[in-house]
Amino acid sequence: MSTASENAHETTVTDPYFQSLFAERIGGANYGKGTEIYKFEKIKRAKRNAMAAHPDRKLLDFGIGENDSMADESVRNVMAAEINRVENRGYADNGVIEYKQAAARFMKRHFGVELNPATQINHCIGSKPAYAMLPACFINPGDITMMTVPGYPVAGTHTRYYGGEVYRLPLLAENDFLPDLDSVPEDIYRRTKMLVINYPNSPTGKTAPPEFFEKVVALAKEKQFIVVHDAAHIMLTFDGKPRSFLETPGALDVGVEAHSMSKGYDMIGWRMGFVCGHERIVSAFADVKDNSDSGQFIATQKAAAAALDDDSIPERINAKYRRRMQKLVETLRECGFQCEMPGGSYFLYVKSPSGTKSGESFAAAEDATRYLIEQFGIVTVPWDDAGSFLRFSVTYVAPTLAEEDALMAETKQRLGDAGLVW
Image (cartoon, rainbow, N blue to C red; front, side, top):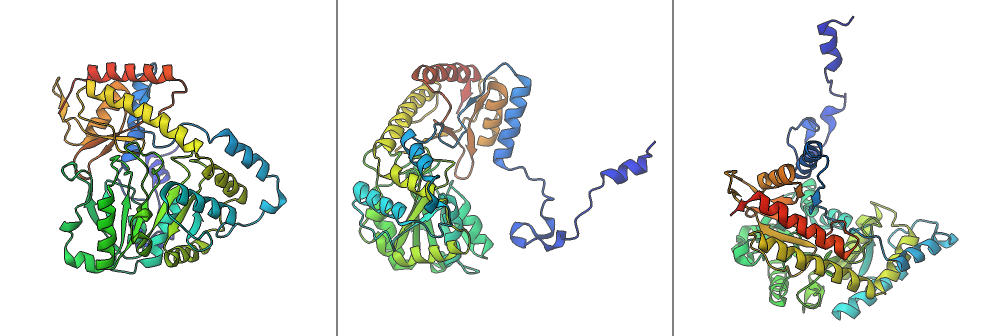
């Protein structure tokens, strides 16, 4: 029989000998000992609690940030053929010319941007690694990357890894979710190496007018920094023709644009994208990438090239998410939310409720999210970076129009029962 002291000894956690060797960038000697719970883990826990408490109640999941459909059958057919070709068996390194040429055709066809596929385009294994690698091309200790918030944090994380700093540009409703570049102090501009922007914006859904991009180009030249434009949602533009940063006069002199096959082509798990723009920046990215990976599977690149050449694919995906977004906007308005069709993306960014008619009070969007998940089985993502907002995604699983409508009806009923106030 074990004694109490023996049981205590068995449950004692001893640090491994290398605990003090962890790099400071990930926490140093304290790595793995933090008690902070990250936002998406909190959402997962709230979902588990909701399902345990109400096993018969279906979760209405508007928190999913990835396409709900498979890649188009024509793309999968190309992939099926290409995986059996012996010439595709090896390392791709910095990519095959077929994909770069398809990307060049895509940029010319949609945006009127002429690019040399051999020097101004390089593939990436999804756009996420591009945002991780680009800081390695420019950031030294003490340098600054300016980034919009809320937003995708990867470029900022890697900026800090290299000893740099992140200057946050809040996206505020009163500024139409565009960063106030005039408010940036001169000493920040002097140390800035990179500006990362993202339009159509995730999560706000805002699209940028041409005047904004023109201002960014002028500032980049005046203040001497490079621009990285995240165009992951570009084919999910709803308020007009999709706009590339690179079609702005002078943009090819100051930066690059990162494109993804995920959002506009239903290829989320395929991990394909490309970086395009100024050839010297693309070259630097390729050099860093060459020391980070050996390229995406060649068959995947060739299938992605076929996708880029078929404009009917993003057209269908755009129509689907536009339709769903229109239904969601109408439903949320009927439930008291103040919202309108976003300019693009499959995210709807709405002001978070402050409480309920029954007396619940929400100090932050995170509190509202937990309440809606646990009490009503409605999953959203909270953003408290620049005001309190909830992000609804229209990537929920609903294979038919009837199922979409049924989901909206159920959402309306549950939100009505919640009795939210603002």
